[in-house]
Length: 125
Image (cartoon, rainbow, N blue to C red; front, side, top):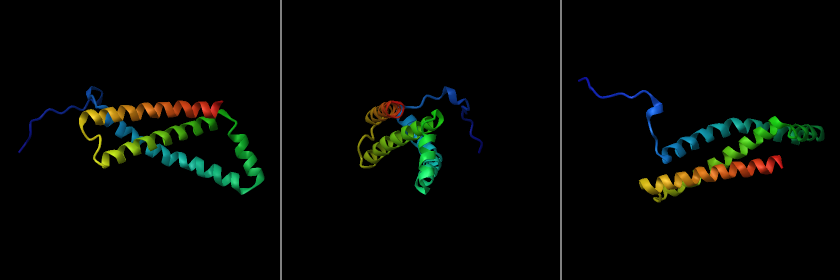
């Protein structure tokens, strides 16, 4: 039996609610954290290997690229934690309705932006 239903392959015309965007962003930050942890683990390993290694990592973190990577890592970690807490609260049966779910998603994304700004101020100032 062949189904004759419309197929929309243009993703730019699909309007997702805030809860969907927050959930997708939570997954994206999880993947970003996976790759960012390679940099973090390398920096910890190098800094703990010797006094020269510690000085090397310390000098490396004075550069723009390393600060940018550190800012990105802290920002995605902050949002991932905020989104994770939101998902845990939803698993407990709260904020599951459409209105409260979208509101909690908007608040989580706003807190993520605030955390990213605060992380930037902390790293560059």
